[in-house]
Length: 259
Image 1: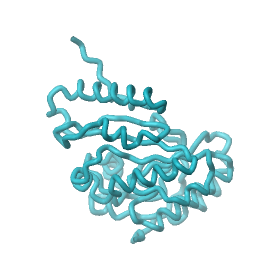
Image 2: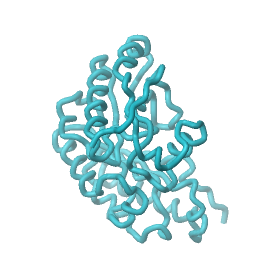
Image 3: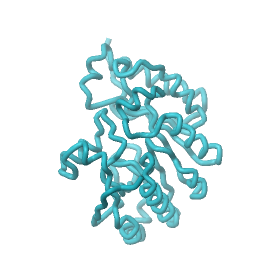
Image 4: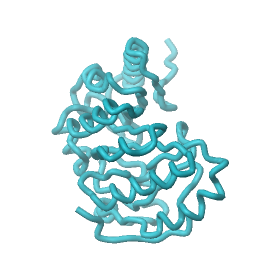
């Protein structure tokens, strides 16, 4: 599968305001995964007029001049950059999109040529070709459930969970740094599941990032949802410490509850 449209931009590399990010590259507009949490990236794209509809969002457009822009920007910014993440407003390995995968790998190689490490996060499948890139890179998957019915309802265009985990495990087994983003984690009134099952499925990884679900009224309809997320945070911390896994708890996930 390939993107049906393309765009050009005047710049590409920028400093991100995301709490665990440095610089980022978003070389695709839109995302075929079509997440319905709702998707914060789609909300911002609509707000700023980049896209008008959900249908437009799920038909991604590739950035034609991505490599050209990076070749101009990297020499100027290389001394300021600690790392570059692909991506914060789209997906670098969008499920079954070969042209996006190929461009993402080219971008990673180019950034690595300046001795700058990269990290990538996907709801697709991490390509096996990544084992040939810099060993200083790290690769992650988003995994908020193991329930395929939930995935099909909330992440309709994304890769099945088992495929994501298998691709991450392959990179881990080949000596690469891996991580898992368990965000946005839903409350039980979305899906009845056990967080421990998800944690055990990725117990091999190097890092876990955990965050709650925002921007959805259904969360606040769940009784004691603030305490629920506090309990889930404790489980992540306990599991990570037990298995010598690094962890990061996203801002606004923990709530101070007065007795």
